[in-house]
Length: 179
Image (tube, rainbow, N blue to C red; front, side):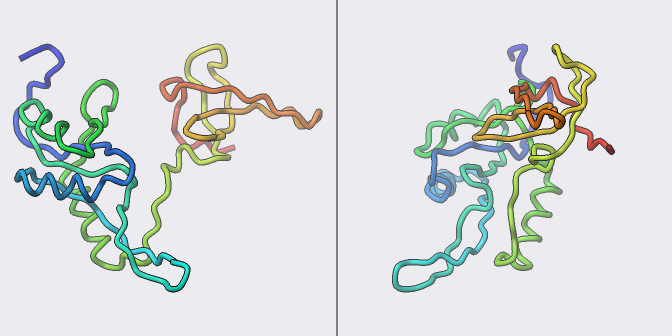
């Protein structure tokens, strides 16, 4: 066992990032190879040129969940067509609890037509965060998210100007600040 491997053994739910629009195909391959997986689907109304149809689409674009013993079965998952990589959080594979999976299943059973999926509220444009390291440490700045980049901006309202800089997520305190 290498130093990067966790000491706890057993199966957990892990997040797999897929190639674009490959979620359903990867889920089929996982079933074929008897890997326990979960692809949450929502029903969306799609318009064609001549009609509307109800289509099952992935709840989270390019993501699905697998229930595996990571250090023993990860290569089995990564070798399948459509699989790209596992999601990591602070250097360790990101896990989802069984309770979160069950809650998601229950929510999707109730009414999938009315489900809306949004990005994490912490990254929502207009939220204020505190910078905890770097040259702007201690400053409270407003978030702006542009094309997969998290940026913060400092307003100079008297001059009607804004200074925008990109920040690392580790340099920002994500608690909701009351201003």
